Length: 391
Image (cartoon, rainbow, N blue to C red; front, side):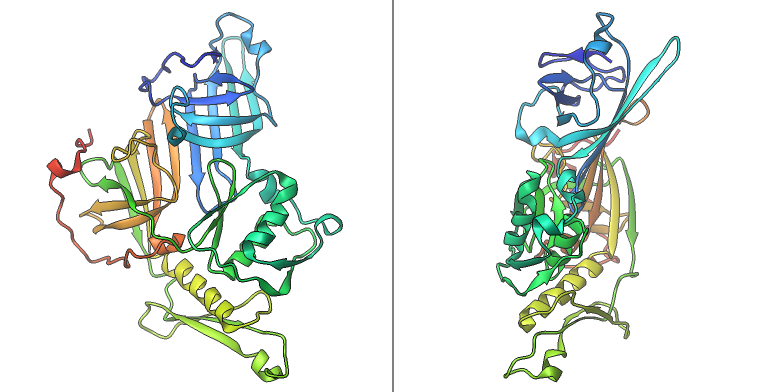
C-alpha cells in the first residue's frame, strides 16, 4: 500500500478518474491506493459500513511498518482525491477489523469499519447511570441518552414535540438505539444515522427531487421488484391509558385508531402500542407509522450507475434523497426514495454506485403519490436530460 501524506496520490491500477479516488484520512495522513472499495450509506440503519483492500506497494521500503491503520483508529472517508467539498464526504468512521495476509511475494491488507454512530447504537442502557424511566419529548429523551456517548443528534422533517405521559420505561440492558427506535414508532418517526456519524430522527418531510435515473442513459443495470406482501386493507393501533375520573377502566383499555391500506380484501394488521398513552393522537401516530412502513414496501428497485457523482448536482449520490426512476421495462416513471447508497470500486466493475430505492413514504417522504405498477411511461427526450448514453 502506498501511503500518501500529501493531498494527491497516484491513480490506482484500474484507471479511476482523478475525482473518483477514495481517500481515508487517519491521524492527518491520507491513504488512497486501494485495490477494492466498498462503502454503504444506510439512512435508516444505526451506522454506515465500509470495507477496503490493498496490496503493499511501499516506496520507500519499510514505510509499511512505520505507519499502519489499526482497529479503533477513527477516520474520514472522502470519495474524491482530496476533501474538496463537504458534498464528497462519505463516512466519518472507525476501523473495527484489520486483516493481513502474505507470502514470500505478496502482502495484502483488508480494513473494515463503521460510522461513529455505531458507538451509541450498541451502547446498553445502564440502570445505575441512565435510569430506566424517561419523560419528555422524543428529541429530549434521545439527547439525554446520547450525551455520554459523544454522538450528536440530527433531525429531518417534522418531529412531534409531544412529551411521553406517562413516562416510558426501558428494559435493563436494552440498547439505546433499539429503545429510541421503539419510541420513534410511537411518534410516526424513523431512527437512522448520517454519514457524519450523527443519529438521525426522520419525520414527515417533502425533499426536492435531486437526480434522475433513466433507462438507456445512465442506468447500468436494474432490478425492480413490485410486491404486495406487506399490503393490508387497514392498519389498527390499540393502546391503553391511565384511568381517571373522566375515563373509566373500560374506556382507558379501548384506545384504538386506524389508517387505511390499499389491499382490496379484508386482511388487517393490528399493532398494540408499546407504552401507555395520554390521548388518541398518540395512537393515530402509531397507526400512521405502520401504514407508511408497510405500504412503502410495494417497490424495491436496485439501480447501478457508473461513477459516484450525481450529474444533476455534481455531488455524490446520497441516501435519504429523492430520485426519479424512469424505466419503461419496469415499467415505472416516478420519484423514489434512496434507502441506501453503496459506492464500489474494483478491477471488474470499475467505479459504480448502487442505489436501493423504495416508495418515498417508506422513508417518511410525503407528497409523491403512490406507485402504479401498470404505468408505461414514454422515454424522455435525451436532449433534455443532459446525460450521455450508458456505454
